[in-house]
Image (cartoon, rainbow, N blue to C red):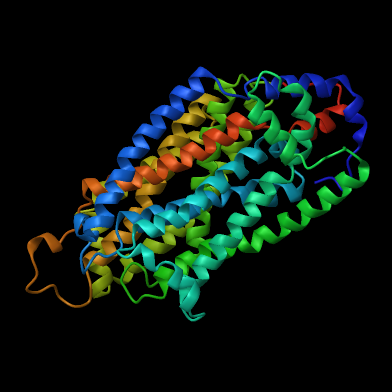
Length: 448
């Protein structure tokens, strides 16, 4: 990140051109209304499913004494994982100085904000008595990993929100006189959120300093959020969870899921909003290389996670590994490893597969596999407790998510999509002032 901003771009014709391109799709359109209507109606059905669970209790789910963490906790781990991409793109790559991340940094922050914000609701969905949630804050103990998780998730969400909002302020000020095609309430929102920004060098100096502080702070926070999440499993003496590498194992998996999510949103923003000039083939090519890098690292940790217990084959670990490799969960396990990790790595090594549409398809497979990977981390371990299952109903032996669970899980995903849709449609999805400043000293516009 630059240490200062040359405000000459404010008097450059390129600013008008860039602002016109980026602000053209901003506003309420018929397609936006239809899409939000579809999401809203679908969400109502999911809310009704949660009402049933709230009224009757967790008995309407497949959760029982043995498997008390099912689809909900797998979904929580997935949400936390995907949210880490904001730190990866904006902080690590941005602070190193990779300029190609500038057009996609805001997309990464939007994803981080959306997934981190809803992660807390996912935890609530797993609570049989959600009205007792305040007790976590009132009577929580520092010895509990749950308190650690709540603290770092909240902190990460706040920092991510600030990292999204602060760079948006100059864009809101630039946009105020250029969004006459939008409703008055949205224009008033821009006026309020721009906080009387005047584009003075002093303001940009303060902004850059605040952003740099946040970009540095979010790195240990992001590492803590998923390390603590991994500790929730690792501190439990269970086969499949009793691992010392769960922290980095979870972190690298988070980078894979988050990178795939960024590519998916990039594609739809590029296609629907006609922003090919700013989200170019080069950006997809670089994201493909990044996805290969983090996937190879994640593959290394996967090999470590499964090879060692498979080599030693202790009694409890042997049952768990057998279930994953050739047993009940074998089909899901090998689909996740092949379709979500190994095959994408091989394909993305070739430039022809790092084109926008190819990247979209590969990223969808990677992201879906990332969700099922979390399911495989959470559920199979609980299938085989150290104590034998005796004198319990057959239905308690194997976990099967119910329709209610599935609907509530889908509801949380819909909430994330709603947040992302609102933020990319009602506000500039690409930083106008950063793009204009970059092009002020460069006569060539971005090319594919």
